[in-house]
Amino acid sequence: MDEDTRTLKIEIPATVVVSTNQEFWDEFDGLNGWSLVPGTQNAIFWEGTIDLSGYAREMKTFYPLAGFTQEGPYHISFGGSGQSSFTIVSSIPLDPEVILTQWGAGGGPGFLDFNLLASGVGQQNYETVMFAENQTHLINSQFPALGVTQLLNKNQSGSLSATASDTLYVMKIAVPQVVANIIGDSMSLPASRVVIPGKFGTEPDVEYMMRLKRSVELANQV
Image 1 (cartoon, one colour):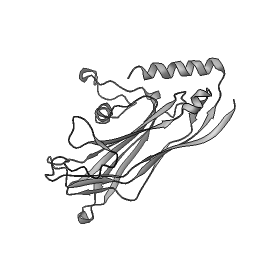
Image 2 (spheres, rainbow, N blue to C red):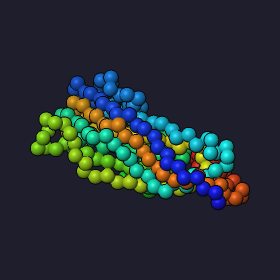
Image 3 (cartoon, rainbow, N blue to C red):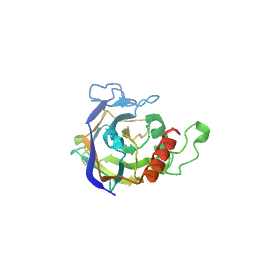
């Protein structure tokens, strides 16, 4: 199998949202390409894509070797308790409302969460979640005036499964830590990027067609 080493990456811009009432975000001048998750008042998201169509036309398969994020210096929250974020790279299209629900259901996309079928939200297949990462940051109680939050935990997951898809879908969601219905005065996230080193290879025709067929089947389950 011929192999071509490549590092995929996507840049995610910094963002800031402000609340004048400490209950929901109502000033969005600093969104910077982010959006409010439909149906919510305090969850924001950014979405983008990684184009693999050139490799798909050459009938090449991408084999990810690892996945990680890089970030700018500060997560900041004023007047609240902190913030959480979730980043996902998927081989199928993503819906921010669905991802937010799955994230809050005990695991996130690709995990066996609580049964969500009654609400119309199912489980995303493990294979389609190439990479995911969630972080929780809390305000340092010794220096609340700085607003700089400290990392409490960071968890990574994902299948790192090979894919014949022509597009990878990337989404990042952020929410404030809510205590007594207070979200705080503002929340900002630094610029970040997702990095996925891997290889493009040419498989035997039958194996490639079966992988392509599987990719289409999973995408149609959305």
